[in-house]
Length: 187
Ligand code: PAN
Ligand code: ZN
Image (cartoon, rainbow, N blue to C red):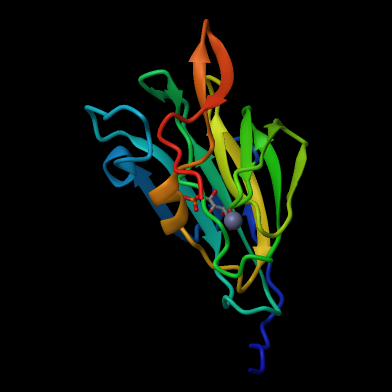
């Protein structure tokens, strides 16, 4: 397929808030849309995170990008986090640049191998293809990062929704701890 020929364009990102201008497509995830993702059930419907995407065609020749703002908070002792996903096209890679806040990027292969990396302002995390990825806000301020990914990466949420990640990030004595997920379904 011939890729769309686009006009060059620019977008401004506020590094503190993660908001874009002009403001693009915004997706808000609340606790109600994350049912089953946390070990405990939530008793509110608070916002957990939002994704602000710079729209370009989702094609191999383009680079999609977005900011994500994960709010501070916990469900039980588990920190607020994104759903997490594999890319539908498994080999598509991605870059995360943290702009503000602090957190952990949890990455896992389908065989259960897990790697966790720190997210803090200025850090670039490289997520190679085949690694599912989830970002967790372990701080008291919003965790804001900018992600760039190959246009046809796509999303496979179902595998994580069914199996979970091998680990969860919980508050133990006031700090984050990465522990095995008791509900993880190994392949
Ligand atoms: C990111 C994520 C974003 C939200 O843009 O989509 O942080 O996380 P979930 O998609 O897991 O809800 C990305 O990894 N795109 O490929
Ligand atoms: Zn991704």
